[in-house]
Amino acid sequence: MKKQPIGIFDSGYGGLTVLREIVHKLPEYDYIYLGDNARSPYGNRSFETVYQYTLQCVKWLFSQGCPLIILACNTASAKALRTIQQNDLPLLYPENRVLGVIRPTTELIGNYSRTGSAGILATNGTVQSESYLIEIKKFFPKMNVHQEACPMWVPLVENNEYDGEGADYFIRKNIQNLLQKDRAMDTVLLACTHYPLLMKKIKQYLPEHIRVLVQGEIVADSLADYLRRHSELEKRCTRTGQTNFFTTDSAEDFDKHAEVFFGAKIRSMHVSGIS
Ligand code: DGL
Image 1 (cartoon, rainbow, N blue to C red):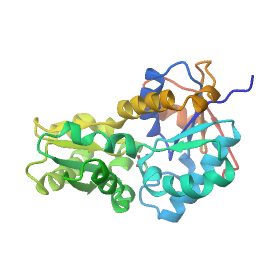
Image 2 (image 1 turned 60 degrees about the horizontal axis):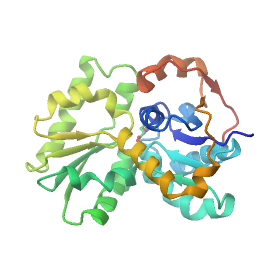
Image 3 (image 1 turned 60 degrees about the vertical axis):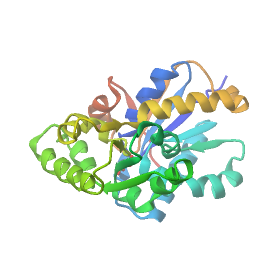
Image 4 (image 1 turned 90 degrees about the vertical axis):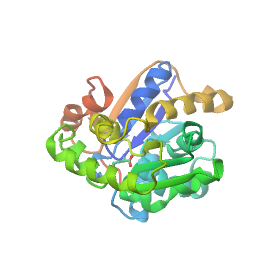
């Protein structure tokens, strides 16, 4: 029987922090991870570029037999998901589905906050799209939501500086900026798949009473719920418990860096011709 894995896409390594939780929660399914490392980061790129790159990767994952794809990247979810869902999917693969990481967290964030004030830490692209502000308003119209773009955080993680002194300067600065926007803020969402790696330092600069939300577990729970509610699609996802990793850049480099995101050693394969 041909494998029909669940596709997990990210601009690079960050989506591995989401895949890790998904595999933990739903180990029976097959997964295929694609990191577009050759063109990452996406965080500062235009809407059109993020959309084109994401669509190319989505098409490749569909060509590998995926009935369902999760965009495990906030920037791609913010800038490409809606157009892909509304314009491309009905023409290309009407039976298949593409989901993002923004909706699962925006559906829940209000349940965590007592004061009704939350902060979003994200890439420039995610902040500019205002996707979090728009989506949270739908579920929690009275909530006050404040954003802070942290364009240096992904490069710090990608360059293995997440634990170094250089990281302190930027993390302190961005967190101070965010906190200044509303003293009542009691919940902060890490709205970028790389940021869980900075958790130690983020907690160091955030007051203790502020709750920090990460997306991995929330997205995994949401996927489990989605599969329960969509049995036709669920039946098409094969279950041999295998995960395969692909990168558009060097597989050797990917394997070197991936462990810190995924929590286990992996062996990836290079994929060319995605453009
Ligand atoms: N994975 C991206 C996100 O969650 C961050 C990395 C990038 O900028 O490409 O927004």
